Length: 517
Image (cartoon, rainbow, N blue to C red; front, side, top):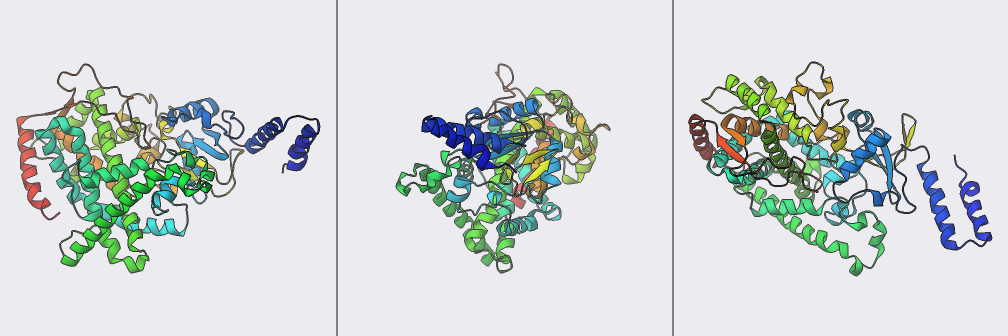
């Protein structure tokens, strides 16, 4: 144990007696304090007194700097953002060892001043620290999205995918909007028992606004929470999130009340919200708590699923040979007279591998989703990880680890089928998080990706847009917490006249069945 009095305070007092100015004395204290604070922690870049490494972390796409530090210092890197220790995990093995195997102490969250406290009064379960409130939230979502329950949503996913391929057939230029509408409609259907007809609808736009406002680190107060001690009139950072909070409450309350109304009328399909309302007394949730709890898959599912589908389109433009292999498998298993269904899923190993490679090639939750926080001091390979440290599983680096993914720049679905592949990649859960914080909607997300990708590949060729000069930049991605491709033109061409006939017939049948939604 370090004797702070003899090693820090006495030398500083001695410096002061020698007449050295106070500012230099404080600077000396900060330097010594930083050295003491970092002793025994994982290696990392040296920071500055008071601010730590904040000046070295880019405001835009910090994950690439994190990956660079992992290559320089090793799979576990430590930095400080102000006084907060931050641990960056750059390999899957380190993430498995800490976030999975030691999930009992790595399942909490750091403090989210804006996204958690101001924006939602700590009612968004994704950002809750580990404890009773989080367990209550997780229990509700698990009941609605465990593997067997997720299978009951295959019908609406099948119907929505029929709408999707028809939209692509009739208006291919707006492919990105169609992907967003598909993801949004699946999310709102399974959550609220109601569909979305347009990506421009009020529900979708308000959801995306809330997600943008809640990006951790967007506001200065996240780094300097002492700003909350300023007079409320001077807390300029409150204006945007508090205005969004009122819009969130209006939207989520409207959706909850609509479910209750249709429940009383007996006109609502089974959905997460109707299940939660029916068990409200058992779960011990208020109406406002229900409104926020059930909104979690609605909020997270739209952006991640639609963004991953956009990445799939981008990959097909750059790697048409992978598209051809998947189409050959689909033609062999499914034939040319019907669209793929969930019954075909286990018979399409290459298509499933192509989806896994899409998730690896450009992970949309590029920082591994919301960061974890460790609740007690820990040690890993002789390195000290202090209680309260923020922990990022940096998927930007993990998915490009050549030890786990040889030739990481290449788009190679075969890597998931080869006998030499790490057996832990068979299910490929890496993109969905770790430990007790793994994405609760993983089964729903996988199913949506399968039915959308398999049907798009069966019906269409993804080709460069007419008149396009070259292919879109494969590294042009947005800067947000979920990083997706910057919008790019793309051609979607039917594979045959027969394919168009099947898509039309499937859509006609789906329209009738969708009427009850």
